[in-house]
Length: 156
Image (cartoon, rainbow, N blue to C red; front, top):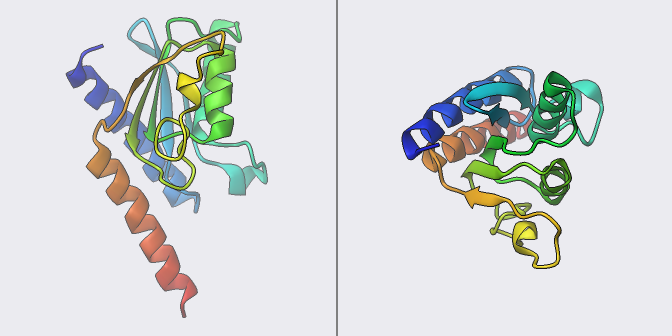
């Protein structure tokens, strides 16, 4: 996909992140695209489901696997509004996606280059192409505003 298509897909993921935020979740959204079609989508829902692994990326991968009837998501691209954590990076590698596109970097938990880079470990049996910083300012602002509002709410 070209840069223009990456932005369109990221905007879709940003809307899913808005939905997560409306449910009181950290605003992260994700979509899984295969052959130009969305086969999976997800948003953070760890609080709602009382599930520590209910991250947007995991939900999108599960949704996509169910859609195509295969846990191997070869040739699929995952879009996510925030750089994935180690858990999500591992799930992407296990799913064998071909490409990851993310928005905001995550200095505290990012596993695609910010804190560490799980994806460039040379002994992995699967390599994923990375594209970062797609609509990063929009994604970053969404997260920053959420946490700013949460701090204000908790300070009273």
